[in-house]
Length: 131
Length: 361
Image (cartoon, rainbow over all chains, first blue to last red; front, side, top):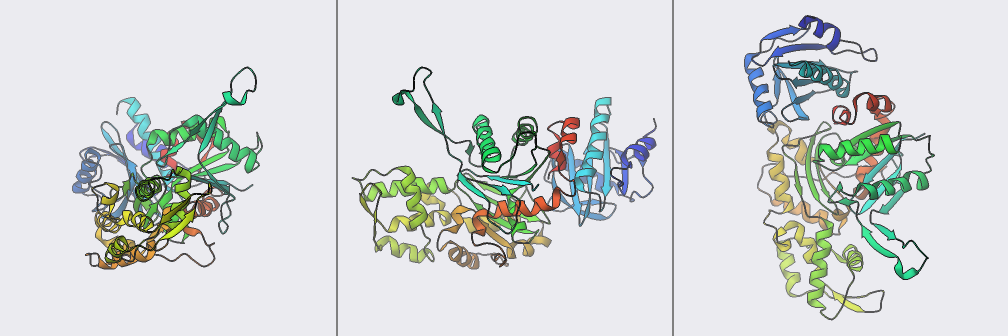
């Protein structure tokens, strides 16, 4: 199983005829393990900010979550495990595992709940596998 | 069948089928009596009655009592049938611990066998009731006060504040004051509760409050057991306590100041929108004179943008501020359940109670 297969088959899978607009699995340092075709070009500072927020929950909320230049409004996630962001009718879910960050970006008609399900389920699985 | 919306508060439980422009079908007190009957014989003197409060400060504490209460509400009052349960939407207070949420989901799916579940925070629901998705709610309930800024349907938890004071502390304050001025009278706490609802009011501003302290207008009130007491300044003290918590013995700023402070911890681009869409809800906020006093203090506050209160839409019933969380829940239920964004039985069976954190936020 390559990481790319994880992204293409599991993160970008179809739920109720809908799928994420983009997804990626990154390392904690920002290195790309795999990403979908439409995943935005992100900057290392953005990943550093995300990692800081996992360590100190609440640091991203005042400034907002930036990913690939797009600003997301931080909404309730799970401290140290999940960051959720919202932008208009879409948003992003970022799940942290031991070695990786799993990112899913969704837009309407897909809902945040569905994006969470996909990203967090894969995250929990990888966590169990030791990643 | 319509979804059921339940807003369980520390004092009143509001429940009913989701019909957004009507009051909740059922508004009943959350207090319960545990009747302990002695095994042999029906001797009346053996029956002990203990008052049980399943909800304390907004959170469910006594699960067995809550289960019994919900069973009564759902099956007896609202008419659900065993085996044909529908969908249920719960209104939760701010900062509900994850464990409590999971336990509630578990209770719903395993004991009550509901077909769908959704939970949302009361602050967001109150805003839906007035037709907005962004704004700041000040929910002054029986067990707690919540100040929560909401941006586009998401509560900004960083900036939200919760105070462990509420209507119940105001009642105790009133009882204390009454005991001071009517030392010979013995007044029951439930009586004080009713007196509070009748007589508590807010002075127009601090200066007016000082006035009433010196020359108070006296009103005599006859208690059901025939005693008469005089109430005057005590009513004003109760109202003032929200703006000057030092009366209650708390070292905190008044409620308007707290609102401004909590909003300023939100990112600045939403600041104006939040402050100009402030909503007061909760039973205690319907005290006479409270809104005017709030508005006045807001105009005096130091920040550049003044908080201003939202007026509820005309098509909504009168008591909107008391039941706003329930009504918002009814509105949300109409959206969430048909679109299958809720937690279904299948989801629960597959993932377990933790799914509530993923799907409901």
